[in-house]
Length: 400
Picture (cartoon, rainbow, N blue to C red):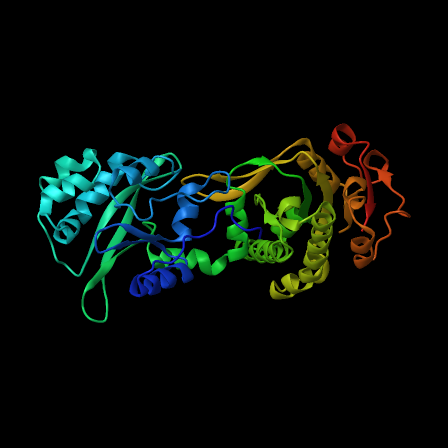
C-alpha cells in the first residue's frame, strides 16, 4: 500500500507516555493521550485516518496545546468525522472536566483561562474528581449523522506514583463481539483498500465479471438451503481469490461476481490486467472444491468470465446505515457484463483493451502472446447475446 501523505506523530518525550502511545499505536487503537496538564501528547494514526477521510490526509491535532484550548477547537472543525464541532467537543469536555479541573493548578479560574471561551459555562459547574478511570458515551459525526461513541479514560502514573497523564481510548458503539464477528470473516488488506477509495474518483482499472452458468436449473434441482450454501461457498471463494490478487470486491447480486483491479494500487496498467486474469484463473481452479463440498459434480458449478479494461471508471465506496461496499460507474462496466454474458460454456473472455495493457514480462508470466492473439468482435460470436449485439458489438475479445 502506498504510504499516507502525512507521517505519524512523534512519540512523547516522557518515557511513560511514550510507552503507552507506542502500545496504542501498535495495536491500532483509537486513542488520545494527554500529559498531566491536559496538553495533547499523542494521537494515534487510527484516529487521524478516521477523522480525516478526505484526500488521503491525516487529521491535524494541536500537539502540545491544551486538549480543549482554542487551537484544538478550531482544528476539530477541519475533521470530516469525530467530535468535529465545538458542541461535540463540549460534550467530551463536560465528561472529562472533573479530572481536568483536579489536574489544573489554580482551579476553575486557571481552567477558564486555558480552555476555549465556548467552554467557560461548563467550567463553572464542574466538581473536581481524582477517579483512576471513568467511562462515558460521547457523540461524534459519521456519514451525515451523529453516532454514540463509548469512551474510557485511564490515569497513567509513573513508577514513582506521580501522574504522567491520561489515556483516552474510544471505539465504535458496536460491541467487540460484533466487531470481532465482522473482522474475523473479512480481510484486513481489503478493508484498507476499501478505505483508500472512500472518496470516489476516476480510477482506471481492470474489470472482472463472473456468473454461475445454469444457476436456474441448479436452483430448481436443489433445496433452497442447499442452493444457498452453494452460493455462499462460491462467493467466499471468489472474494478470497480477488483479495489475494489485490483486487476490490464489487457488489454481489445473486450468484454474480464483480471485481476491480485498480492501477493506483497495482502499480501499473499491466499489473492490474495481470492480477485480473490471475484472479479469474485461480477462481476457476477452486470450483472443483466448491462442487465437492456441496456434494455436486464438477460440471454442476461452472462460471463464465468476462474481463475488460476500464480507462474512465468512477470508483468509490458507498456507505449507508445498512452496508459498506465498493461500486464503479462507467460504460466499461456495462461492456464487461456483456462480455461475460457471451462466455457461455465456462469460458473466460478477455477484451483486446485489457490484454494489450500487458507488458511482455507479464504476458509471458500468464503464458500469453498479445502480439499473436486473434480477436473476434462480440457481435460475431456464435454465443453473442442480444444485449451484446446491441450495446457492445465492436468489442474485440479472445479466450484466455
